[in-house]
Amino acid sequence: MPSQPLEPTWRTIVRLLRWDKPEGRLILMIPALWAVFLAARGNPPLPLVGVIILGSLVTSAAGCVVNDLWDRNIDPQVKRTQNRPLAARALSVRVGIVVAILAFFCAYVLALYLNPLTFWLCVAAVPVIVLYPLAKRVFPVPQLVLAIAWGFAVLISWSAVSCGALTAATTCLGYETWLLWGATLLWTLGFDTIYAMPDREDDRRLGVNSSALFFGDYAPEAIAVFFTATVILLAQLGGAMKLNGFYWITLIAATGVWGWQYYRLRRSNLPAETYGRFFRQNVWVGFLLLAGMILGSRI
Image 1 (cartoon, rainbow, N blue to C red):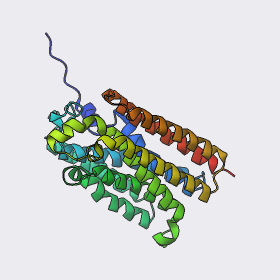
Image 2 (image 1 turned 30 degrees about the vertical axis):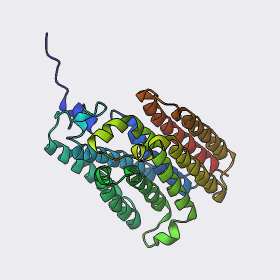
Image 3 (image 1 turned 135 degrees about the vertical axis):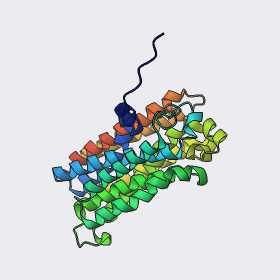
């Protein structure tokens, strides 16, 4: 039989950057867009929106490459990850490092468009992104580290709108900013615990930590707490910013989706693909809330 043609290198690099799986890239973009539209009351400068979108794409891609570099000897032992380019040795470690450096360099160039405080927030996010894979080895709830990385998306985007070159962070990152930051952390803990649930047996076997393992049989209840707290903070945010009825409709809809997910997660022996579907649903919930924030900001 004729051998299968080799995958072009550019396509393998696309898979390394995970641009073939847009949900994981979009879900980082969502809190960044939440922040930029809320801080600008629904009408941010379009060039800034473009920088935020491109920045989230290259930053999340860089994070994926760094994660795969850390896990290149673990991923081959897990069915879900064994075909990743570095795990399958389709790309060398040297190529992975070069791609990661190029992605971070693109993020650096985009950050130069931003004000000084926002630029340094971008710099501060890099160690969190780089060390997250290490957290899986030494910290019982590594999803919290990931959530902190997601939280930087809120601070970066909000400060890009609200903070001038000489404005102190204490005056331009107000109460509303931190409500959105907290909601983003809790939402991330919720959806990434869902994402980790089908990998529990592999993680236990390999000695890798996850929130799904940490909470054990109570993982669905922990997810329910995270999503409930997210709703509470988003409701406080809507009240503080006096968002109109469009926002509240989308928040009610999001609450319904999260409640239904909890109801399903309580069942044992769910197919592995269910957890991936719930993760993808959170992407669309995030965009639904974004629409509510944009329309809800219009007086």
